[in-house]
Image (cartoon, rainbow, N blue to C red):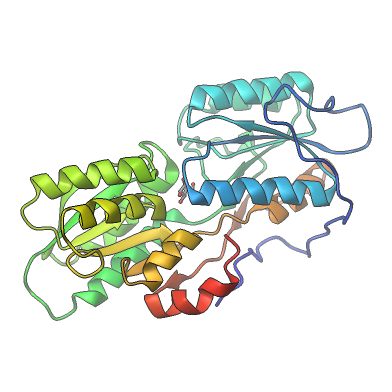
Length: 329
Ligand code: GYE
């Protein structure tokens, strides 16, 4: 199995072993940013806590800030862009050294990012991209290629139904509307399956990347669709919620309805190893160490790469069984 931290950053990771306290829970707490001591202050605005992926991502960022000796001001946006904008403004007022955030949606960032730029505070995007063509608004974007993930999901499906001619009815559970991983996982998948007209996406709706919504939307799909062959869920959590709905409807997930998801968090991998999910495209949440490395470099005035790509793989049930004992998240 691939070790998935990116190799796109030149040089190794220089992580100090000092243990420092984790950041507070809101943008306003913690030590004063900027000038007080020589510790780097990082303001980080997280999307929320919508999924197992997000929980692992938050842990990775908090733990690696602590071991890199970086003072982290951590702010949870609870899924709302307005909260992220507020947090970024608060980081600017506090004069943190570096701002990083995982944008809940792709658009609507230019004003606040211009404010950060004017204040001379470098910004690093983590996990999700923005659609602003002005790349001078941020120093780097570290994260996965979500189009590629969608393509991998589609390629598995094409292989699975190779040589068959009957129609394949697909239902899709999309991530948060407007979020990069929702847009890109949808388009990457669509691009691959469109080559064969037997594949039909008969219903596609958001499940907000959560188990609860994944379950509720799958219930409506099961009621409204006379024949469902495949479920493509943009993350494990929605797939796991949908499995509950499928079982409650007296069907066998993985057999009666084939299931493809993205992320490969432990719960997803467990369902995969049990045959309830058929295929998972990995998306690694362990971005913390690389982020801290970039934060140190940018704070030193070094040039950092505009794009740092996360390496990832895919899993079948057999591969999930083998990988599970060492799975970190
Ligand atoms: O796949 C999903 C999460 O942005 C890559 O957000 C992330 C996605 C992840 O909630 O589970």
